[in-house]
Image (tube, rainbow, N blue to C red; front, side):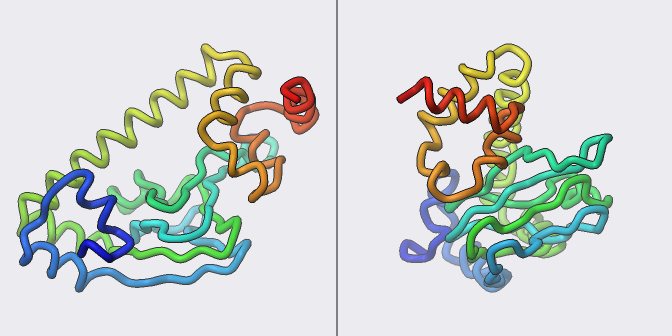
Length: 191
């Protein structure tokens, strides 16, 4: 496992038994997505959890005017799914699109449930991952209400500077909840 692309992610949370690791690895499927490809279509069931090995994906939804709003970026070492749809079997409320060529490892919801039932360490991993992502989501949501556009930009730039050279700026502006013009002004002020 130590050489598998998922090793660092898994070992950050748990130390799986050899049997648990073997069971996990047998369920994984490798996926290759071209730039622009849809990983999880809008308003459809979502039964796979993707671990991004290479590439970048964005999660987006349509607002009441039909405009795309970017809500999250999935990068190497992170997960990509509509978690609500994945866990409940409901239709997705946002779409996931590969912004670059992307490689992922995925597991089906039913297989993950089997792992949770059979191996305590996988259930623990699921709980800890859910906890980390929930905290990140709460922090992002709160930041949209209590931070200024400049503060959101500066924080994003400090943590995700590499994305500015990899993906269209309109997606970053949307993620930050600002216009492309405001993003351009903030970038110019920073120089």
